[in-house]
Picture (cartoon, rainbow, N blue to C red):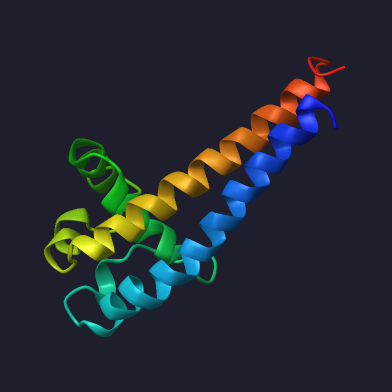
Length: 124
């Protein structure tokens, strides 16, 4: 088995874990936030079904200064309101959101870089 195959397998396993945490986070945290009248409209726009789960995870995982920049940009309606989300979540919700977001980000980034490196012949 080549190095490329091994690294791609690691990335796929991380991606699979991210999918599991996506479902868990959506069912535990985002479902609760959708039912709350205060937070229902603060989850950001949903470009595709379930996109608000990613918006909420991003609001929990990224630093507050970055979230404030996103929320003050012209595209602020696309992002979740981080201060309101933090106010209505507990430590378990935040842990699940951070874990899901970073697993998802690492897996996707790793796959993209592996494919690019394969394309330029690094693994040949």
